[in-house]
Length: 240
Image 1 (cartoon, rainbow, N blue to C red):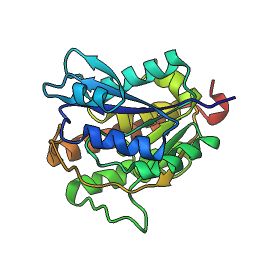
Image 2 (image 1 turned 30 degrees about the vertical axis):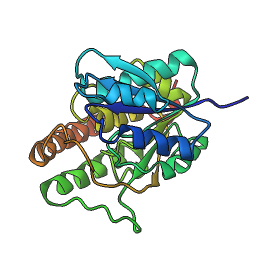
Image 3 (image 1 turned 90 degrees about the horizontal axis):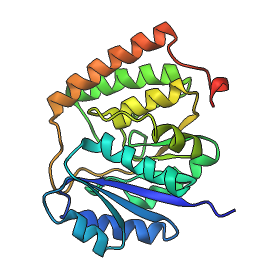
């Protein structure tokens, strides 16, 4: 049976990069369908995405990456896709790594692309990096397997994850990354990671600054540690 693949691109005011991202996805995975979730953009993101060949779903106002991705998972479930991979609209993710992220679904329900590996040139420093290390340790303990880059948005989802995230996917800040991993672990999904290349944002601006991110990551780490100490998650044998 043909395995249908969807590349989901959440986009908020990314007219400077969206067409190029779509073109690169088409180059590296011509068999995949592309969905751009236009997250209340006030620029030409939706028009340029449609002109580049993507299916576009436009939200009436900005709901954030979590809300946009829940829309993508609902679409993937409704249309019967077997795999979905998230690619950022700002050019940070390299579509050349799509095969690696998707191929990992042969052995996992979720595959996270990690930027922290020996060949990576990506650097995060200061309090944000410290918070990410603590968060990585907490999630890895829950997962009983390494999650070195819990805030990476370059990730894929298989059928079980699509069905779960179409119903239960957090919309709060970084919920689409950290929160969704915690949910997946609680439901017994298998999570693996694979090395990928990531670049710094070329256009536009991030939704939150580095200080806000560090504070949130610290709070999320404490919440996840508390949950793991209580045993508030299922083993993989309990997955539905």
